[in-house]
Image (cartoon, rainbow, N blue to C red):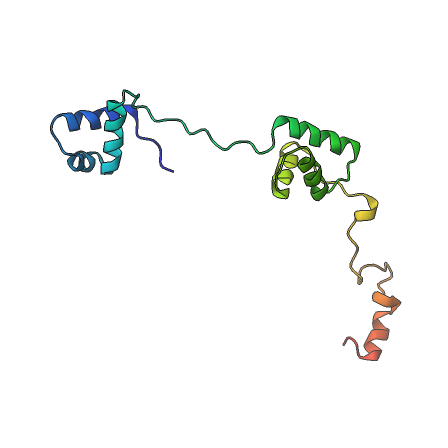
Length: 149
């Protein structure tokens, strides 16, 4: 979104119209669209300040109460999944997506920690420190069988 037109330029646009120029002429002169000139004139006519109105920004999806509650749940049980957090948040009336929860946890400085039961399994090729392949076969046995080679 482009930057708002400064107040001084808005005043000059209105003054140029008051001097007898048409909306289209004023728009061409200042490089704005005719509807923009019309909006500025309407603001003046309604005795509204010509300053641009501030944009409020997005409404926070997770309020501070929900964030504190989520932090408490994680302190009690550190291996909660994002889906479990989503279910708990919905139980207190806060409907958010998993991505929102993930982003908020990251902003809170909390990282996902895995417990022993949820670690990712190792590759079958690397599972044996002796270099054996899956099923306990040695690489030279596989070559003899014509599996590799």
